[in-house]
Amino acid sequence: MSSIVATNIRISEEVLKSLKYRAIEERKSVNQLIREAIEGFIAVDIQPERHVKDSFENVIGIAKSGIKNGSTKHDYYLYGKKK
Image (cartoon, rainbow, N blue to C red; front, top):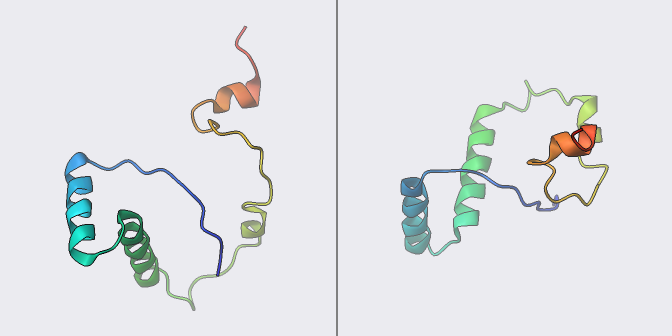
């Protein structure tokens, strides 16, 4: 089994509210419902015989910077301080 990583998504308040009610009904966590939905989408969308593994995929996740705010401060980390 591959490791689980954290990520952020942005959804409307209405969708989140619906997810929370559904999680209660199904006795699952919101995270679990989202994972299951994504896994179901991928299983339907990608046919194994058509999916060719790109060798660049081996690069994904090989380096860790420890930077927590890289998505919002990427210009700073790429180009340095503003002059």
